[in-house]
Amino acid sequence: MKLIPHWIDGSAVSTTDGRSLPVYDPATGQQQAAVAAATEADVRAAVRAAAAAFPGWRGTGLSRRAEVMFRFRELVDANRKEIAGLISAEHGKTVADALGELARGIENIEFAAGAPALLKGGFTEQASTGVDVYSIRQPLGVVAGITPFNFPAMVPLWMLCTALVAGNTFVLKPSEKDPSVSLLLADLLHQAGVPAGAFNVVQGDRVAVEALLADPDVAAVSFVGSTPVARHIYETATKAGKRVQALGGAKNHMVVLPDADVGAAADAAISAGYGSAGERCMAVSVVVAVGSVADPLVDAIAARIAGIRVGPASDPDAEMGPLISREHRDRVAGYLAGGGGDVVVDGRTAPVAQGPGFFLGPSLVDNVATDSGYYTDEIFGPVLSVVRVDTYDEAVRLVNANPYGNGTAIFTRDGGAARRFQYDAVCGMVGINVPIPVPVAYYSFGGWKSSLFGDLHMYGPEGLEFYTRTKVVTSRWPDPSTSRVDLGFPEVR
Image (tube, rainbow, N blue to C red; front, side, top):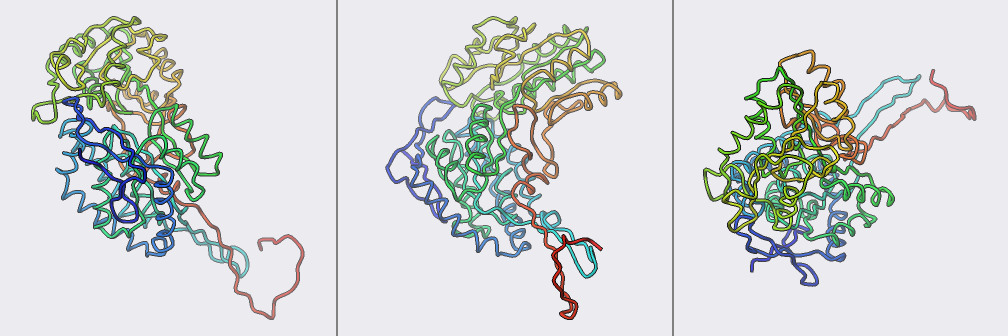
């Protein structure tokens, strides 16, 4: 059985106690590899390597660090097919979906290559007589990233690019469910010129996570995952004095007004609800149908579901793959056996759901009650719920009352209604006739409410702010003849 190792201090290493975890092929349900499970000693070794590499990497010129990011971008681009193949083999998403994930990740490398323009400080000459004041941005030190299974390439690239270009060193703990991409990224970073120890990977489970949260040499932690874990990481790491950005769960609403183009809205709901088998933090999971649009919209979505081809990534015509694990597939399917809505399309009856692998067909549930599990839980699978309301105001109240505030969208032809919605929605990211409003890399990604624990969003300008701290220098070069003792509080004159 193939063993997937750690990457510590510039090379692949196995775990100290031999413990490992299974890695499955979601399309067949069979174990295809094992991944090393880090001990506390393994994590400590990775952090030590990162701490030792920090002075040298921080001392490397900013233009050189940006050049390394540019080289890394070229290497990732040249290896797109191999990276996408690894994603598909371990996650199960289609190759086209994996290539799309990687493309959005590459945007973050490109942003990092241009980061010098944003890492410069400010300078005020003659703030007071003979006194200059200026600010500089400096890296934090060793930072850690804990990333989810659903985007094994993109989410690490959200973190590591801005962290490294800012002069930090990095320890990545990827998901144990699809860990191989992390090692390929580590090798490409090494080829690009990131020195040994500046980027490390520790594989494993909660043991590795808790060790990173407790390690005194880790200055900051970035996380993407479920809300309960995000809350735990935020509370634990901040208590230990670390800076934290912890992105949690979502329940993204797509509001469809009566004047919307029904066909376009149905296409968007299908694309955003069932892409990657619904295993996206920006997936649309609730369609809020306003007034008379409900019946034709539900009919249009149901008609389109019949044309979705579900299958393994090896099928070039497949549009949706399996879920990540048998346990998760069964949990998602369990919602369809309960009450709280009218099941229009039941994914459990799809032919592919009867065969091997962790497949479940797309499901559609109408007339969903807002106190049912369909609505209250982050299902994280190919189950699209429709909640019917009478007015725009009801729709907005529904969006804003939800404990999650990751993303939302509105579909309408009315520019005034759209502008009002972007003003009214209590949510971190808003789409107007765009169902998955993931920002481009030169903005930042993050939700509100229980979708984010911490003050700063991820990647982009806020990512650079997270991975640096500002130092203000007040400087004077006086003539010795003017020096005197003055115990008064300094005034600006």
